[in-house]
Amino acid sequence: MFSKSALVATVALAAILSSATPVDREQGTLIPFAKRSGLTTEDGVFDHEKAIQSTIYTHNKHRHNMINLQKNDPDNMSEGASIRPLRTYDSAATHKRRQAESTIDEKNDLEWAGLISVGTPGTNFLIDFDTGSADLWIPCSNCTDAACDTKHKYLAAASSTSQAKTGTFSIQYGDQSSVSGPIFTDTVTVAGITSNNQYFSAVSTLSDKFESDPIDGILGMGYQTLASLGQPPFVNQAKTQGSIKNAVFGMKLSKVGSELYLGGTDTSQYSGQIEYHPVTGSGFWQIPNATALVDGKTANSGFQTIIDSGTTIMYGPTDAVASFYKSVPGASIFDEQNGYYQFPCDSVPTVAFSWGGNAWTISPDNFNLGHADPTSSSCIGALAGQDLGLGSDVWLLGDSFMKNVYSAFSFDQNSVGFAKLS
Image (cartoon, rainbow, N blue to C red):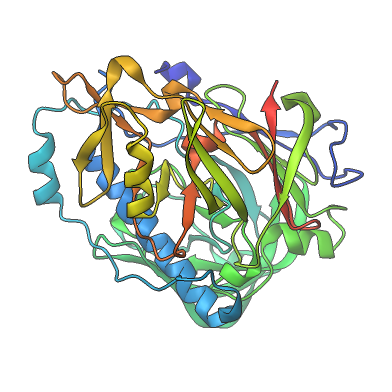
Protein backbone atom coordinates (compact mmCIF):
# COMPACT_ATOMS: atom_id res chain seq x y z
CA MET A 1 0.00 0.00 0.00
CA PHE A 2 1.09 3.62 -0.44
CA SER A 3 0.07 6.98 0.90
CA LYS A 4 -2.31 9.50 -0.61
CA SER A 5 0.69 11.58 -1.63
CA ALA A 6 1.28 8.89 -4.23
CA LEU A 7 -2.10 9.45 -5.83
CA VAL A 8 -0.66 11.94 -8.31
CA ALA A 9 1.43 10.59 -11.16
CA THR A 10 2.10 11.97 -14.61
CA VAL A 11 1.35 11.29 -18.24
CA ALA A 12 3.98 12.36 -20.77
CA LEU A 13 2.55 12.83 -24.25
CA ALA A 14 4.90 13.61 -27.17
CA ALA A 15 3.76 14.92 -30.52
CA ILE A 16 6.70 14.27 -32.83
CA LEU A 17 8.66 11.03 -32.80
CA SER A 18 10.73 9.31 -35.45
CA SER A 19 9.78 5.62 -35.53
CA ALA A 20 7.66 2.85 -34.08
CA THR A 21 10.73 1.30 -32.54
CA PRO A 22 12.26 2.70 -29.33
CA VAL A 23 13.24 6.35 -29.75
CA ASP A 24 14.78 9.03 -27.58
CA ARG A 25 12.31 10.72 -25.28
CA GLU A 26 11.36 14.21 -26.42
CA GLN A 27 9.85 17.01 -24.39
CA GLY A 28 6.22 16.20 -23.69
CA THR A 29 3.41 17.60 -21.58
CA LEU A 30 2.93 16.42 -18.01
CA ILE A 31 -0.65 15.66 -17.01
CA PRO A 32 -1.80 14.56 -13.51
CA PHE A 33 -3.27 11.08 -13.23
CA ALA A 34 -6.40 10.42 -11.20
CA LYS A 35 -7.21 7.15 -9.48
CA ARG A 36 -10.35 5.65 -8.09
CA SER A 37 -10.66 3.50 -4.99
CA GLY A 38 -9.27 -0.01 -5.30
CA LEU A 39 -9.99 -3.58 -4.31
CA THR A 40 -8.07 -3.59 -1.03
CA THR A 41 -9.15 -1.76 2.12
CA GLU A 42 -6.87 0.47 4.16
CA ASP A 43 -6.13 -2.40 6.56
CA GLY A 44 -5.18 -4.80 3.78
CA VAL A 45 -8.47 -6.71 3.43
CA PHE A 46 -9.96 -7.74 0.08
CA ASP A 47 -12.96 -5.53 -0.74
CA HIS A 48 -15.30 -8.23 -1.98
CA GLU A 49 -18.17 -5.95 -2.90
CA LYS A 50 -15.96 -3.58 -4.86
CA ALA A 51 -14.40 -6.54 -6.65
CA ILE A 52 -17.82 -7.86 -7.69
CA GLN A 53 -18.72 -4.43 -9.07
CA SER A 54 -15.43 -4.40 -10.99
CA THR A 55 -16.08 -7.87 -12.40
CA ILE A 56 -19.59 -6.91 -13.51
CA TYR A 57 -18.25 -3.74 -15.14
CA THR A 58 -15.61 -5.78 -17.01
CA HIS A 59 -18.20 -8.37 -18.07
CA ASN A 60 -20.58 -5.75 -19.47
CA LYS A 61 -17.83 -3.66 -21.07
CA HIS A 62 -16.63 -6.65 -23.09
CA ARG A 63 -20.19 -7.76 -23.79
CA HIS A 64 -20.55 -4.38 -25.51
CA ASN A 65 -17.26 -4.95 -27.36
CA MET A 66 -18.51 -8.31 -28.66
CA ILE A 67 -21.72 -6.64 -29.90
CA ASN A 68 -19.56 -4.13 -31.79
CA LEU A 69 -17.28 -6.83 -33.20
CA GLN A 70 -20.25 -8.88 -34.38
CA LYS A 71 -21.57 -5.77 -36.15
CA ASN A 72 -18.27 -4.44 -37.52
CA ASP A 73 -16.04 -7.47 -38.16
CA PRO A 74 -17.75 -10.81 -37.40
CA ASP A 75 -15.22 -12.87 -39.38
CA ASN A 76 -12.43 -11.92 -36.97
CA MET A 77 -14.14 -12.83 -33.72
CA SER A 78 -12.14 -15.40 -31.77
CA GLU A 79 -13.28 -19.01 -31.87
CA GLY A 80 -15.93 -19.56 -29.22
CA ALA A 81 -16.62 -15.84 -28.78
CA SER A 82 -20.21 -14.91 -27.97
CA ILE A 83 -22.34 -12.14 -26.53
CA ARG A 84 -23.00 -12.93 -22.88
CA PRO A 85 -26.17 -11.76 -21.08
CA LEU A 86 -26.01 -8.41 -19.34
CA ARG A 87 -25.02 -8.79 -15.68
CA THR A 88 -26.62 -6.61 -13.02
CA TYR A 89 -25.36 -5.54 -9.63
CA ASP A 90 -27.32 -6.45 -6.48
CA SER A 91 -25.87 -4.20 -3.77
CA ALA A 92 -28.02 -5.69 -0.99
CA ALA A 93 -26.77 -9.22 -1.68
CA THR A 94 -23.11 -8.28 -1.86
CA HIS A 95 -23.20 -5.96 1.13
CA LYS A 96 -23.97 -8.89 3.41
CA ARG A 97 -20.62 -10.41 2.51
CA ARG A 98 -18.60 -7.43 3.74
CA GLN A 99 -20.26 -6.19 6.90
CA ALA A 100 -17.02 -6.57 8.89
CA GLU A 101 -14.80 -4.85 6.32
CA SER A 102 -13.28 -1.41 6.80
CA THR A 103 -14.06 1.58 4.60
CA ILE A 104 -11.90 1.53 1.51
CA ASP A 105 -9.19 4.15 1.00
CA GLU A 106 -8.30 5.64 -2.37
CA LYS A 107 -4.86 4.10 -2.58
CA ASN A 108 -4.72 1.59 -5.42
CA ASP A 109 -3.68 2.56 -8.95
CA LEU A 110 -6.64 1.20 -10.90
CA GLU A 111 -7.47 3.95 -13.34
CA TRP A 112 -5.14 5.85 -15.64
CA ALA A 113 -6.44 9.26 -16.61
CA GLY A 114 -5.27 12.63 -17.89
CA LEU A 115 -6.66 15.82 -19.34
CA ILE A 116 -7.85 16.22 -22.91
CA SER A 117 -9.41 19.26 -24.57
CA VAL A 118 -12.56 19.13 -26.71
CA GLY A 119 -13.90 21.96 -28.87
CA THR A 120 -12.87 25.45 -30.03
CA PRO A 121 -12.20 27.06 -27.63
CA GLY A 122 -11.39 23.88 -25.77
CA THR A 123 -13.01 22.53 -22.62
CA ASN A 124 -10.83 20.25 -20.47
CA PHE A 125 -12.00 16.78 -19.43
CA LEU A 126 -10.35 14.23 -17.15
CA ILE A 127 -10.33 11.06 -19.24
CA ASP A 128 -9.55 7.40 -18.60
CA PHE A 129 -7.24 6.05 -21.35
CA ASP A 130 -8.58 2.53 -22.01
CA THR A 131 -6.82 0.07 -24.34
CA GLY A 132 -9.84 -2.27 -24.07
CA SER A 133 -12.33 -0.06 -25.92
CA ALA A 134 -12.33 2.29 -28.94
CA ASP A 135 -14.87 5.11 -28.42
CA LEU A 136 -14.57 8.54 -26.82
CA TRP A 137 -17.40 9.77 -24.65
CA ILE A 138 -17.79 12.75 -22.29
CA PRO A 139 -20.81 14.27 -20.46
CA CYS A 140 -22.90 16.90 -22.23
CA SER A 141 -24.35 20.10 -20.81
CA ASN A 142 -27.91 18.78 -20.53
CA CYS A 143 -27.03 15.71 -18.47
CA THR A 144 -29.05 15.92 -15.26
CA ASP A 145 -28.13 12.55 -13.73
CA ALA A 146 -26.55 12.71 -10.28
CA ALA A 147 -23.36 11.24 -11.72
CA CYS A 148 -22.97 14.35 -13.91
CA ASP A 149 -23.17 16.82 -11.04
CA THR A 150 -19.41 16.96 -10.48
CA LYS A 151 -18.31 16.41 -14.10
CA HIS A 152 -17.05 18.81 -16.72
CA LYS A 153 -19.63 19.05 -19.51
CA TYR A 154 -19.56 19.61 -23.25
CA LEU A 155 -21.65 22.49 -24.66
CA ALA A 156 -21.84 22.05 -28.41
CA ALA A 157 -23.11 25.60 -29.01
CA ALA A 158 -19.97 27.03 -27.38
CA SER A 159 -17.60 25.34 -29.85
CA SER A 160 -17.14 26.79 -33.33
CA THR A 161 -15.92 23.41 -34.65
CA SER A 162 -18.76 21.25 -33.27
CA GLN A 163 -20.88 19.27 -35.70
CA ALA A 164 -23.92 17.19 -34.68
CA LYS A 165 -24.18 13.74 -36.31
CA THR A 166 -27.04 11.31 -36.72
CA GLY A 167 -27.62 8.39 -34.38
CA THR A 168 -27.03 7.79 -30.68
CA PHE A 169 -24.39 6.08 -28.55
CA SER A 170 -25.16 3.75 -25.62
CA ILE A 171 -23.38 1.36 -23.25
CA GLN A 172 -25.08 -0.58 -20.44
CA TYR A 173 -22.94 -1.11 -17.34
CA GLY A 174 -25.21 -3.28 -15.22
CA ASP A 175 -26.29 -0.96 -12.39
CA GLN A 176 -29.69 -0.47 -14.05
CA SER A 177 -28.42 2.61 -15.86
CA SER A 178 -26.26 3.37 -18.87
CA VAL A 179 -24.05 5.85 -20.64
CA SER A 180 -25.86 7.23 -23.67
CA GLY A 181 -26.27 10.34 -25.75
CA PRO A 182 -25.98 12.08 -29.13
CA ILE A 183 -22.98 11.90 -31.45
CA PHE A 184 -20.74 14.80 -32.49
CA THR A 185 -17.48 15.58 -34.21
CA ASP A 186 -15.15 18.27 -32.91
CA THR A 187 -11.50 19.10 -32.36
CA VAL A 188 -9.92 16.89 -29.70
CA THR A 189 -6.47 17.69 -28.33
CA VAL A 190 -4.28 15.65 -26.00
CA ALA A 191 -1.16 17.55 -24.85
CA GLY A 192 -0.77 19.37 -28.15
CA ILE A 193 -1.70 16.39 -30.34
CA THR A 194 -4.84 17.32 -32.25
CA SER A 195 -7.45 15.29 -34.11
CA ASN A 196 -9.90 17.37 -36.12
CA ASN A 197 -13.46 16.17 -36.73
CA GLN A 198 -13.01 13.44 -34.13
CA TYR A 199 -16.14 11.38 -33.51
CA PHE A 200 -17.36 11.10 -29.92
CA SER A 201 -20.52 11.02 -27.86
CA ALA A 202 -21.57 13.78 -25.49
CA VAL A 203 -23.65 11.62 -23.16
CA SER A 204 -26.86 12.92 -21.63
CA THR A 205 -27.31 9.94 -19.30
CA LEU A 206 -24.48 8.73 -17.09
CA SER A 207 -24.38 5.47 -15.15
CA ASP A 208 -24.50 5.70 -11.35
CA LYS A 209 -21.25 3.73 -11.45
CA PHE A 210 -19.41 6.96 -12.35
CA GLU A 211 -20.90 9.14 -9.59
CA SER A 212 -17.94 8.73 -7.21
CA ASP A 213 -15.39 8.35 -10.00
CA PRO A 214 -13.12 11.36 -10.65
CA ILE A 215 -13.07 10.85 -14.43
CA ASP A 216 -15.36 12.71 -16.82
CA GLY A 217 -15.27 10.09 -19.56
CA ILE A 218 -13.30 7.46 -21.46
CA LEU A 219 -11.00 7.59 -24.48
CA GLY A 220 -10.74 4.15 -26.07
CA MET A 221 -7.35 3.20 -27.54
CA GLY A 222 -8.28 -0.13 -29.13
CA TYR A 223 -8.94 -0.94 -32.78
CA GLN A 224 -11.75 0.67 -34.77
CA THR A 225 -13.65 -2.63 -35.03
CA LEU A 226 -14.43 -2.29 -31.30
CA ALA A 227 -16.03 1.13 -31.78
CA SER A 228 -19.76 1.63 -31.39
CA LEU A 229 -19.35 4.82 -33.43
CA GLY A 230 -17.67 2.90 -36.26
CA GLN A 231 -15.09 5.67 -36.69
CA PRO A 232 -11.28 5.87 -36.31
CA PRO A 233 -10.12 6.23 -32.68
CA PHE A 234 -8.07 9.26 -31.64
CA VAL A 235 -4.57 7.81 -32.16
CA ASN A 236 -5.35 6.55 -35.67
CA GLN A 237 -7.00 9.77 -36.79
CA ALA A 238 -4.19 11.89 -35.32
CA LYS A 239 -1.71 9.95 -37.48
CA THR A 240 -3.87 10.24 -40.61
CA GLN A 241 -4.01 14.01 -40.11
CA GLY A 242 -0.26 14.28 -39.46
CA SER A 243 -0.38 15.25 -35.77
CA ILE A 244 1.83 12.25 -35.00
CA LYS A 245 4.09 10.37 -37.39
CA ASN A 246 3.43 6.95 -35.88
CA ALA A 247 0.27 5.34 -34.49
CA VAL A 248 2.16 3.97 -31.50
CA PHE A 249 1.85 4.58 -27.78
CA GLY A 250 3.55 3.37 -24.63
CA MET A 251 2.22 2.96 -21.10
CA LYS A 252 3.85 2.79 -17.71
CA LEU A 253 1.32 2.00 -14.99
CA SER A 254 2.92 2.34 -11.58
CA LYS A 255 2.49 3.67 -8.07
CA VAL A 256 4.97 6.43 -8.97
CA GLY A 257 5.71 8.09 -12.31
CA SER A 258 2.90 6.58 -14.38
CA GLU A 259 2.68 7.88 -17.93
CA LEU A 260 1.15 7.56 -21.36
CA TYR A 261 3.44 8.37 -24.29
CA LEU A 262 1.90 9.06 -27.71
CA GLY A 263 3.74 8.60 -30.99
CA GLY A 264 6.35 6.08 -29.85
CA THR A 265 7.86 4.76 -26.63
CA ASP A 266 9.67 6.53 -23.79
CA THR A 267 13.12 4.95 -23.52
CA SER A 268 13.71 6.62 -20.16
CA GLN A 269 11.07 4.35 -18.62
CA TYR A 270 12.47 0.95 -19.61
CA SER A 271 15.72 -0.89 -20.16
CA GLY A 272 16.72 -3.16 -23.04
CA GLN A 273 14.60 -3.73 -26.14
CA ILE A 274 10.84 -4.06 -26.33
CA GLU A 275 9.73 -7.64 -26.99
CA TYR A 276 6.98 -7.27 -29.61
CA HIS A 277 4.32 -9.85 -30.48
CA PRO A 278 1.86 -9.65 -33.42
CA VAL A 279 -1.81 -9.23 -32.57
CA THR A 280 -4.61 -11.38 -33.94
CA GLY A 281 -7.39 -9.86 -36.04
CA SER A 282 -9.94 -9.80 -33.22
CA GLY A 283 -10.04 -6.01 -32.77
CA PHE A 284 -8.41 -6.18 -29.33
CA TRP A 285 -4.76 -5.81 -28.40
CA GLN A 286 -4.77 -9.62 -28.40
CA ILE A 287 -1.66 -11.78 -28.70
CA PRO A 288 -1.52 -15.59 -28.97
CA ASN A 289 0.66 -18.42 -27.67
CA ALA A 290 0.78 -17.35 -24.02
CA THR A 291 2.06 -19.45 -21.14
CA ALA A 292 1.19 -18.91 -17.47
CA LEU A 293 3.82 -19.97 -14.95
CA VAL A 294 3.51 -20.56 -11.22
CA ASP A 295 6.77 -20.66 -9.26
CA GLY A 296 8.66 -21.14 -12.52
CA LYS A 297 6.60 -24.10 -13.77
CA THR A 298 4.03 -24.09 -16.58
CA ALA A 299 0.44 -24.03 -15.34
CA ASN A 300 -1.34 -23.19 -18.63
CA SER A 301 -0.10 -22.79 -22.20
CA GLY A 302 -1.17 -22.01 -25.75
CA PHE A 303 -3.85 -19.46 -24.92
CA GLN A 304 -4.70 -15.97 -26.20
CA THR A 305 -4.32 -12.81 -24.11
CA ILE A 306 -5.95 -9.37 -24.37
CA ILE A 307 -3.95 -6.50 -22.82
CA ASP A 308 -6.47 -4.08 -21.30
CA SER A 309 -5.57 -1.00 -19.23
CA GLY A 310 -9.27 -0.50 -18.49
CA THR A 311 -9.52 -3.74 -16.51
CA THR A 312 -8.37 -3.82 -12.90
CA ILE A 313 -7.20 -7.41 -12.46
CA MET A 314 -6.84 -10.48 -14.72
CA TYR A 315 -9.44 -12.96 -15.93
CA GLY A 316 -9.34 -16.31 -17.69
CA PRO A 317 -11.94 -18.92 -18.68
CA THR A 318 -13.37 -20.67 -15.63
CA ASP A 319 -11.86 -24.10 -16.30
CA ALA A 320 -8.46 -22.67 -17.25
CA VAL A 321 -8.24 -20.60 -14.06
CA ALA A 322 -9.28 -23.59 -11.95
CA SER A 323 -6.40 -25.50 -13.56
CA PHE A 324 -4.05 -22.58 -12.88
CA TYR A 325 -4.82 -22.56 -9.14
CA LYS A 326 -4.18 -26.30 -8.92
CA SER A 327 -0.54 -25.27 -9.35
CA VAL A 328 -0.76 -22.83 -6.41
CA PRO A 329 -0.05 -24.63 -3.10
CA GLY A 330 -2.96 -24.36 -0.67
CA ALA A 331 -5.26 -22.53 -3.12
CA SER A 332 -9.04 -22.93 -2.94
CA ILE A 333 -12.15 -21.27 -4.33
CA PHE A 334 -13.32 -18.15 -2.44
CA ASP A 335 -16.26 -16.92 -4.55
CA GLU A 336 -17.37 -19.46 -7.13
CA GLN A 337 -19.86 -17.19 -8.91
CA ASN A 338 -17.28 -14.47 -9.55
CA GLY A 339 -14.29 -16.79 -9.89
CA TYR A 340 -12.08 -15.50 -7.08
CA TYR A 341 -9.55 -17.83 -5.41
CA GLN A 342 -7.62 -17.66 -2.15
CA PHE A 343 -4.21 -18.95 -1.08
CA PRO A 344 -2.07 -18.77 2.10
CA CYS A 345 -0.95 -15.18 2.68
CA ASP A 346 2.47 -16.33 3.88
CA SER A 347 3.25 -17.99 0.53
CA VAL A 348 2.16 -15.72 -2.33
CA PRO A 349 2.96 -17.59 -5.57
CA THR A 350 5.40 -16.22 -8.12
CA VAL A 351 3.24 -15.77 -11.22
CA ALA A 352 4.55 -14.92 -14.69
CA PHE A 353 3.39 -14.82 -18.31
CA SER A 354 5.45 -15.59 -21.39
CA TRP A 355 4.80 -15.40 -25.14
CA GLY A 356 7.86 -17.37 -26.18
CA GLY A 357 10.46 -14.85 -25.01
CA ASN A 358 10.96 -13.45 -21.54
CA ALA A 359 8.86 -14.54 -18.60
CA TRP A 360 7.22 -11.35 -17.30
CA THR A 361 6.79 -11.72 -13.54
CA ILE A 362 3.94 -10.24 -11.52
CA SER A 363 5.11 -8.92 -8.17
CA PRO A 364 3.55 -10.39 -4.99
CA ASP A 365 1.99 -6.99 -4.22
CA ASN A 366 0.28 -6.92 -7.61
CA PHE A 367 -0.98 -10.52 -7.42
CA ASN A 368 -2.23 -10.30 -3.82
CA LEU A 369 -5.56 -8.44 -3.43
CA GLY A 370 -5.52 -8.68 0.35
CA HIS A 371 -6.77 -10.88 3.19
CA ALA A 372 -10.02 -12.74 2.56
CA ASP A 373 -11.40 -11.15 5.75
CA PRO A 374 -9.85 -9.23 8.68
CA THR A 375 -8.96 -12.37 10.63
CA SER A 376 -8.12 -14.69 7.74
CA SER A 377 -4.68 -16.07 6.95
CA SER A 378 -5.78 -16.52 3.32
CA CYS A 379 -5.38 -13.89 0.59
CA ILE A 380 -7.19 -13.35 -2.71
CA GLY A 381 -5.46 -13.74 -6.07
CA ALA A 382 -5.60 -11.13 -8.85
CA LEU A 383 -6.59 -13.76 -11.43
CA ALA A 384 -10.29 -14.69 -11.50
CA GLY A 385 -12.24 -17.22 -13.55
CA GLN A 386 -14.89 -15.61 -15.76
CA ASP A 387 -16.31 -16.63 -19.12
CA LEU A 388 -16.58 -13.15 -20.64
CA GLY A 389 -17.48 -14.29 -24.15
CA LEU A 390 -14.09 -13.25 -25.54
CA GLY A 391 -13.33 -16.71 -26.91
CA SER A 392 -12.86 -20.32 -25.85
CA ASP A 393 -9.26 -19.83 -24.69
CA VAL A 394 -8.87 -16.06 -24.30
CA TRP A 395 -7.56 -14.44 -21.12
CA LEU A 396 -7.82 -10.78 -20.16
CA LEU A 397 -4.72 -9.21 -18.57
CA GLY A 398 -5.41 -5.87 -16.92
CA ASP A 399 -3.52 -3.59 -14.57
CA SER A 400 -2.38 -6.39 -12.24
CA PHE A 401 -0.17 -7.52 -15.13
CA MET A 402 0.59 -4.18 -16.81
CA LYS A 403 1.97 -2.60 -13.62
CA ASN A 404 4.95 -4.98 -13.84
CA VAL A 405 6.13 -4.05 -17.36
CA TYR A 406 6.45 -1.21 -19.82
CA SER A 407 3.76 -1.82 -22.46
CA ALA A 408 3.94 -0.66 -26.08
CA PHE A 409 1.03 -0.72 -28.55
CA SER A 410 1.68 -0.30 -32.28
CA PHE A 411 -1.17 0.14 -34.77
CA ASP A 412 1.51 0.51 -37.45
CA GLN A 413 3.02 -2.93 -36.78
CA ASN A 414 -0.18 -4.48 -35.34
CA SER A 415 1.76 -5.62 -32.30
CA VAL A 416 1.99 -5.37 -28.53
CA GLY A 417 5.33 -5.33 -26.75
CA PHE A 418 6.77 -5.44 -23.25
CA ALA A 419 10.02 -4.26 -21.71
CA LYS A 420 11.61 -4.23 -18.26
CA LEU A 421 10.84 -1.11 -16.26
CA SER A 422 13.83 1.11 -15.51
